[in-house]
Amino acid sequence: MRNKKIAILLVTFVLLLVTVIPVAAITWGEPDNGEHPHVGTLLFVQNGVGYYSCTGTMIAPSVMLTAGHCVEENGNINDVTYVRFAEDAMASYGDYSSTQEWLNKEWLAVKTVIPHPKFDDYAKFPMTYDVGVVILKKPYYPKDSNGNFVFGELPELYFLEGLTGVEKNHFTVVGYGMQGTLPPFYQDDYARYKGIVKLLEVSSYLTAGGEANAKFSNNQGIGGGTCYGDSGGPTFFKDTNLIVAVTSFGWAKNGNCIGNDYNYRMDIPDALDFLYDILNKYSGKR
Image 1: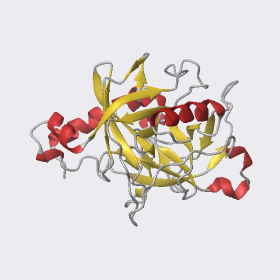
Image 2: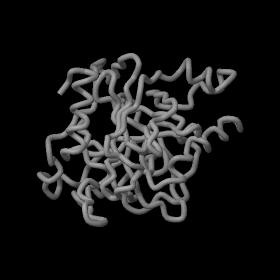
Image 3: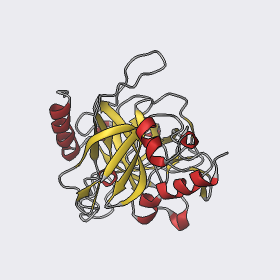
Image 4: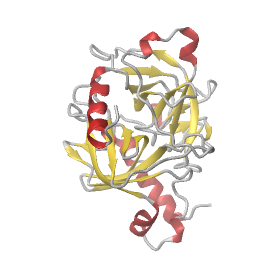
């Protein structure tokens, strides 16, 4: 059982997703059990306030893919960012005399974070450009249960448009956010969970220009959804490593994570051009 000091820290973690539209955590899912070692969690400070929490996926040894709002606020990139890939992100917290010592010893250091150049705190909603990257100071090589290196992969251009009926029924979302029923609770938060969602609309035109936001289910009966704390986490096609979108925003009715999720698509030119430029600069990978 976590002590009171940790419980207070957990409340601080969710500030970002409580006070803005973006969301982040897997509801009605199940423990990841090592299936996605390349998915990690971020702790960061924005404009002097934190720590906030998000999720991200390694797409190259030094490059983690996440959401734009997880790396920038009000035109300023994060003051500081840390990354961890433990299944339980809170593990070992009580072994240290201070939060800073814990971060220094158990979390990975970050060189810089980079938002999409057009990201502007949702000012152009629904064209949010809600994608960003975290550049680690030292390369990190996540391994699967067989000891093979594993990274997230980018989709082909307009991949989602090519899917037929049954192919839209199985996408895997992964994140470190809040789990539970209604309302979401904190018992197992900041552990890596996975869930299954359906693609409801390839391009969700909330208003004109909403083609970047794919609409996914968030339903207990289907097997998963996202909530406070899963922002930036991957939406994988089926059980592959193909990242078709990242968790961006949703409708949290009365503080409960029910309603549909809207994930920023990775198969559109704005996202792919940005990410390939990053990969070419920081890994030589395309």
